Amino acid sequence: CKKHIPAETWTKIEAGAFRKLVKHLQDRNGAVQNMDLMTIGGFCRNCLAKWLVVEARKMSDTINDDDDDNINLKEALDAMGYDDAAVEVYGCAYSEWKKLHQKKATDEQMQRFNDSSDIHAKHDKTLLKTRLSEKPAPVDNSKLPVLTPVCLKPASNNASVNSQPASLLSDVCCQDVDAVVASSSTDVAQSNDNTNKALQQSSSTLSGYQAPPPPTGGLDLKIGILTVSDRASKNEYTTGDLSGPAVEQALKYNVGVLNGNGSGVAISCAVAKKSIVPDDVDEIGEVLKIWSGKGSQSASCNLIFTTGGTGFAPRDVTPEATLAILDCECQGLMSWVSNECTVEQPLATLSRGTAGICGN
Image 1: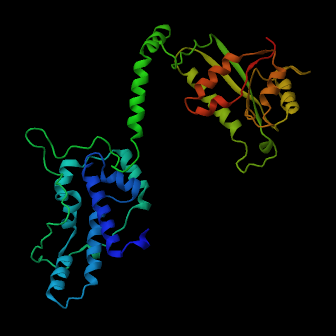
Image 2 (image 1 turned 30 degrees about the vertical axis):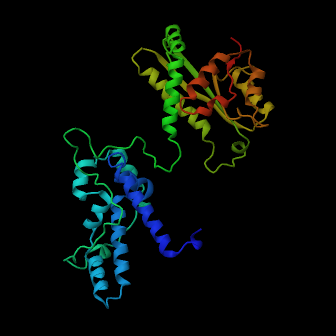
Image 3 (image 1 turned 180 degrees about the vertical axis):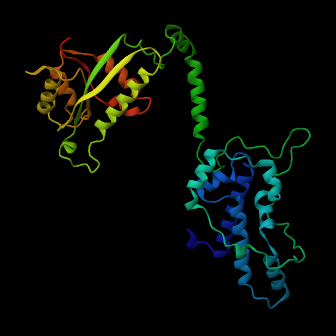
């Protein structure tokens, strides 16, 4: 639509949008910090003030100073500095705004700010310097929109001109989703209050896990770790198999925690077998039979972990291969595993992992 609007009118539209942005930020002084603006958008209120000065310099350079009116305008533009522009952006002197509204940054805010340095606006310090020390006589700007000062201290009757708006969204933005969600959540919580109380009475907790007592006496674990992956079996990963080593590391860590909890439990944990097979029922099953002692050989492992092949792809067949050699499936154990894993990974419930025992 810009090509249908005269350039002078379009410039006024842009100027109006800029004034609206300034007013929006002034209305949210305490809630919207400069550091957060820099982190997210790469600019802040200081940048707006500096851009005002830069545009004043550019305009000054285009003015022909043949007559007195042009001379006065050029002098005013050259005398305009950052402090002058900051008053227009902040609604008061920047130093005063900092006292009233700037909050001490947290370590996390500083880290995010530093990490976003690539997008921070850069400013030419030479252009920002004033070219004249004395300003010309003021002009009549009574027809310009006036922004209400927002950096005043609260009045004695506690009615502050500094109060924040009910919403941080602009007056042309979409509905405040957070407010809607919060309102809906409150309604649902109130309507289900009796149900929640009944649940609390029937169970001390639905999400907290109470560990069973540790095993008594010594425990000798001979571990088998079987990675099921077509690509890993063909050595197609530049990193090699990562899931098998991750299982081993996690197992040894948790056994170490149990051994060091002061309960007197001594768990011996040694990885006896490790292997990688493709996503094939027969090959998976053959390894599991051998390790568990269901074949012609005695068992080399008393605890076997498989990793991989538990999704919904046609070649994800680890659960089927495992079930084929189990004497007794333990569905409750995998239900608990799925519940615990969703704390870290919500999609863990899509795993079809299974567990059980062979023999006694």
